[in-house]
Length: 182
Ligand code: GNR
Ligand code: NI
Image (cartoon, rainbow, N blue to C red; front, side, top):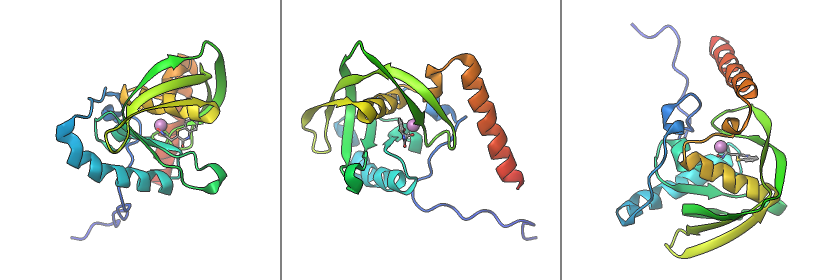
C-alpha cells in the first residue's frame, strides 16, 4: 500500500535542528586535529544552509555536529564576508550592556529582545588553523555571543525570564503543530 499522504520532499543540504532537540542543549566538544576532514567537509555545508535560511550565523550543533565550530556572515553591504570560528572563546566583554532583538534558525519565527555585553573580544582558530582574534560591537557582538552560546547548549530564550521563554516555546510548538496539521 502506498502511503495515503506523500512524505514532504527532503530539503536539499543539511537540515537545521529545531527546538526541542536535545542536541541543541548539549555542550559541544573542542575541535581537534583528528576532526580536520570533518570540519573541512562541514564548513561549506554550514555556509550553504546559513545563506539559504537565510541567517547571519550558524553553529555546528544546529546541524547535529557537537563540535565547537561556528560560521558567521553579517552580509554587510550585501556582500559575503564569511568567517569560520573554530574553538571560539570570549576573552573580554564590556561592562556596558546592549539590548537587541534576536532570532534563531532553531526557533523559526520567534524573536525577543536579549541583553548582553555590548562589545566582546573572541579568540579562535580560523579554517587554516591560524590563531585569530575578532572584536565586535553591535550586531556582530550579539551574533558572536549567540553562536558561542550554541556551543554551550544555550539558546537566546535561556537569557529571558521563564515567563517569556515559556511563551516563546509554547508559541513555536503551536505554530509547528498547526503547520503540520495544515
Ligand atoms: O540569523 C540570525 N540572526 C540573529 C539576529 C540577532 C542575533 C543573533 C542572530 S543569529 C541568527 C542565526 C542563528 O540562529 N544562529 O545560531
Ligand atoms: Ni541560533
